[in-house]
Amino acid sequence: MRVLGIETSCDETGVALYDSDRGLIGQAVYSQIELHAAYGGVVPELASRDHVRKLLPLLQEVLEQAGVRPREIDGVAYTAGPGLVGALLVGAGVGRSLAWVWQKPAVGVHHMEGHLLAPLLEEPAPSFPFVALLVSGGHTQLVEVEAVGRYRLLGESVDDAAGEAFDKTAKILDLPYPGGPELARLAERGDPGRYRFPRPMTDRPGLDFSFSGLKTYTLNALREELAARDDREQTRADVARAFEEAVVDTLVIKCRRAVREMRVGTLVLAGGVSANRRLRERMERMMRDEGGRAYYPRPALCTDNGAMIAFAGYQRLAAGQHEPLAFSARPRWPM
Ligand code: KG4
Ligand code: ZN
Image (cartoon, rainbow, N blue to C red):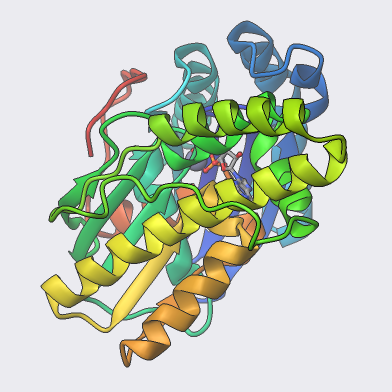
């Protein structure tokens, strides 16, 4: 079975083809970073228009890459939410229209389920059951995964998502959009021993997170330190490092707690923040110490992409799930 996946929930246009025998046979992602950089963040209306502009050329590119003709596609999957409503409607509209023209089934996919299943596209793939840490710009969740479609929420952020905290703290540090990867780069030059920031909500039981206080803590620490010292550049790097350490350490503490409580030996990382090098290293070490293993996809499958939507869509279509021709987008959608 071959499934076309379309992702347009935010500022990346992603298209991919998943073949159930051969795996990923074509994929392309176009990032709108340059378009939004001047505004310091994603401008929803510009995002929608740019998806319109790029979606069909990307589709063409992926079909050529895979050497597949439209009639050889068995179904279409698109991100139906959560995300920016205008951006979602572009992908949903195009996905549904193609399915109608091709007379093939179509299915709307939950963006976070896409992220959650992306690690299964890699070799070796993690086996069920596992605990998944979903860390993106909009979500921070710990999920117990028994099988495709069988998810139980163990904990989540009560305020900012981890990626959102990275992005907001990056702004405080005067770093350009998109902040998360820029902050991680600055932190590489930072001294891990100079500052120690708090690990929110780790001193009490439970698997929820809170990252908004850490951002405020960073703002205050930076102001005080910059006022007191003249090594500005090193101080910024040291503060970035302390922030990253605090977020990563907090995530590690909660993941360790979750795999122990669930008695599973497999931890899966997914979502944009799981591209973070420190996070991957620390989780790998923690799981080794626990006698288990951590899995995470290559960076291009951590951040938004069409491949994860094609794969999640394949799982749904193969299980006989698809939808009538009407479509909707859900800017908010609990999984
Ligand atoms: O999954 P994603 O591409 O989009 C959403 O579904 O939100 O995640 C984007 C988030 C952004 O907040 C971005 O700053 C963060 O992932 N991110 C990172 C890194 N790469 C992306 N955060 C920290 N370190 C990174 N290397
Ligand atoms: Zn995402």
